[in-house]
Amino acid sequence: GAVVSQHPSRVICKSGTSVKIECRSLDFQATTMFWYRQFPKQSLMLMATSNEGSKATYEQGVEKDKFLINHASLTLSTLTVTSAHPEDSSFYICSANDRDRGSYEQYFGPGTRLTVT
Amino acid sequence: SQKIEQNSEALNIQEGKTATLTCNYTNYSPAYLQWYRQDPGRGPVFLLLIRENEKEKRKERLKVTFDTTLKQSLFHITASQPADSATYLCALEGGGFKTIFGAGTRLFVKA
Picture 1 (cartoon, rainbow over the protein chains, first blue to last red):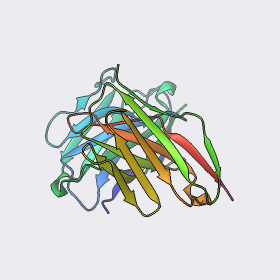
Picture 2: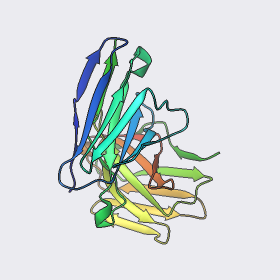
Picture 3: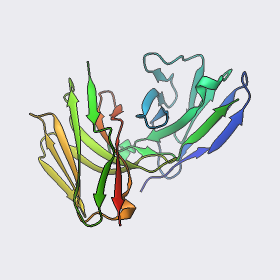
Picture 4: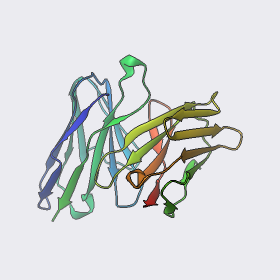
């Protein structure tokens, strides 16, 4: 099956700093990737749809200047949390479809646990 | 407003029994519906997809039904095992390639 990796798996940073999370599709090309955040015992909340070579599409209520998304290649999307604050502490997960195979299922990365102190 | 509802209470069952999880939705007309498994601290893993013109789908011990009139999907695990303990997420096609997830139901299978 298709594999998506995420790096880092866990990060602790101080308030006011920025953190970059990488999402890679390892064995397929992903024209579109998705970024989610998840609070404990809650649903995955879609933050944005990342499109290769163009601007990301953000969901309502998600600050695009705070959560910078770059999808520079067909296998890599990055999410940068700028000027992080404790309320940004969460589990961030990326996913991708393998649309070339006509597949609708999402392949998820293992997630990144962000803790802002 | 649009909603995807899954039973927020955990489901506890005995090993060997059939687990049945429910997903109800309102104000969506999804072309397909998916079920995922999520273990603590991990990303979800795809299990099954069922299209709007399909009533039932099976994969090994898993069975999914999809009733577009009732706006409901049922997810069954037969002959459940302790290793099936996890959170199970229902997900709908939300338009524009987006997938919208329910909050999930936690399943505990006791040996």
